Amino acid sequence: MGVAYRSIPWLLALAVLSSMLVSTSTAYPIIADVDAGDTKCFNFNVPDDDDAHMVFIALPDDVDEEVEEWFSSQMHGMTKKGSADFMKKLPDVSKEIHGKISDDQYNGRSNVYVKITLPKRPVLRHQMFMWYAPVVVMNVVKASMRGQNKKGKNVNPPGGYSTCYENRNDGQGSKVLFDVVLMSDEGQDDELQNKIIKKEHLTPLEANFQEGIKAANTILNEMKYMERREARMRHTAESTNAKIRLFSYVSVIVLLGVTWLQRMYLKGYFKKKKLM
Image 1 (cartoon, helix red, strand yellow):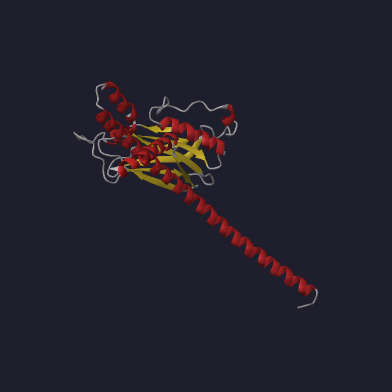
Image 2 (tube, one colour):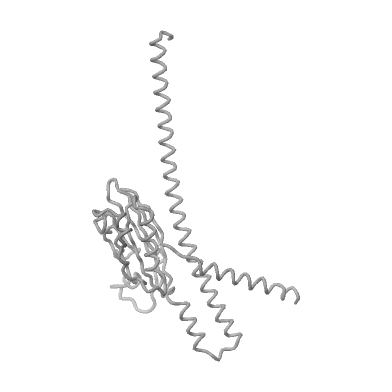
């Protein structure tokens, strides 16, 4: 019993620390680098009896870091549950940000396409991005069920949904910011809080049980955030490794070229001095 009581302060401290970390974490969208003439695809699953919204924004690969950060933060506001801008249009671009975007690119044709498909179903969406303009797809599960004439629960196929980004430009790379929001994530904390407020006669044990459910949902949301963050960091690492590999090849070629030039120069010099 003494050991159990001594462990309580440590458990409380761990719970407080976890809540602080969860409250300060921010889930930003995933960024996919799509080279010129390349296509990248991503798969994701939606649980049964659930639905999802999707948001995409296409940016040029040479976009300013401050502009990319601004669109990432604004897109985060669009997909954050409980936000006043949830699944609404982006706010007007400030003059400072707009000054770092060329006029011929802003809302211009990108020649980069997004394609959303589902196994054994018609294509859900296939359209071209406009630079810096968000593409919002609401209720992808409901849209995929149209014309299926199925009653009852929504059962998603095991293959999941596939989003492909095709860059049809010759020498212009692109970055695609995208995020998927499950409808089950919307307003969970508010619903649980309302249940606790309405039941003023709850015993302390029942109140603690409700707090435990809320903490479990918070942990699940954090796990989803870490999954999206891991995917974004993986794609960033792959892009960085590809650039480093290309730089290594160029360095070797330059080194061999310089060596060959030095050899030819020294050979000509020695012949001119009649040393060979």
